[in-house]
Amino acid sequence: MEEQDINPLPVTKKRPEFLTLLCVLSFIGIGFSFFDSLVKIFLQTSSNLIKLLNQINSVFGNIIDNQGEYIQTQHIIGFIAIIAALICLAGVIMMCKLHKTGYFIYILGEIAPPIAVILLAGYSGFNGIYASVYMISLMISFIFPIAFIIMYGLNLKHMK
Image (cartoon, rainbow, N blue to C red):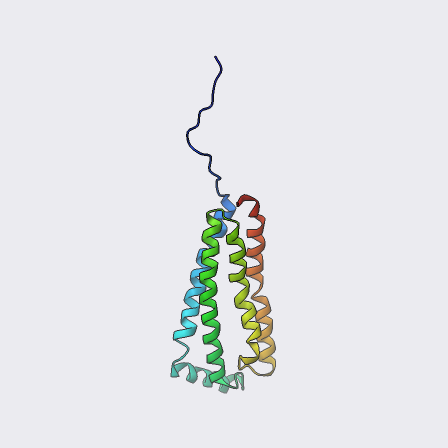
């Protein structure tokens, strides 16, 4: 008698462990980014921050010329980062469900904040050598987003 393989359950694609790890790490990173953005928006408006900036300027020299401009720029960056975190969250959820579209949404959410910060760097309020150090740190901030974009890209073959 011939043996038949009768499987009434549909075959579902299993998410690779590496993709699962990337998703978990992304959820953690998105949470930190979201929290940091809230801090930038709500806590950096206090007069205590102005006092702190004045103390920093008195100890290290004139690091930040225009404190009001610095705080305003930090608020803008905070709002951009919150929106980007939500975009990344949507992309990661889609990639966890193995939807390829989530990858492209994720790229937008990851690249937008560093680019916005670089575009706003002229309004950072930093002076002289500190402005250069600030720009270098911004360039370094591209490392993790690019690394995760590459790692997710390696998993595109598992998505539909």
